[in-house]
Length: 191
Image (cartoon, one colour):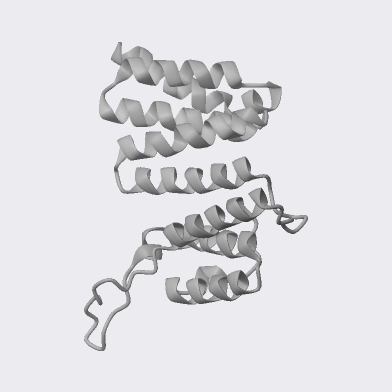
């Protein structure tokens, strides 16, 4: 994703405030993208609650960037159904959601919630595949295979790897071929 602002040094609340200002100007995609980029850059700190003067977390103060991004994506979807024309740089609905699910899946991997990660990554990979964006889908399918391996489900990992290999075009194979080979070797070792 490309970054339009300096969100790496922003706090979750600053990102939330900047995105809210964009949403109030009917720039819903830009608002959601600001939150998603901030979430990607901040990692687990993105959902950190605010603290009081003693440094204690304030209950209920976490901005939940991805939840709010989803709210704005939903609103944009509904407005489009009613004939609203988004800005020219707004991607199609399915690609917006593919980006959202990709980021959530990767966050769940960081949190060691592989089952939840698989759900998000499956959705994202399917959405990218529907648009023939194999260069995006293949690494997600590889991550799905790795999640299954982490959970000890070698058969499901093998299926995900097979899907990744089937999806590979020349560009994807060139970029991700060695990673897929490593996953295949790990699957073979565990069989």
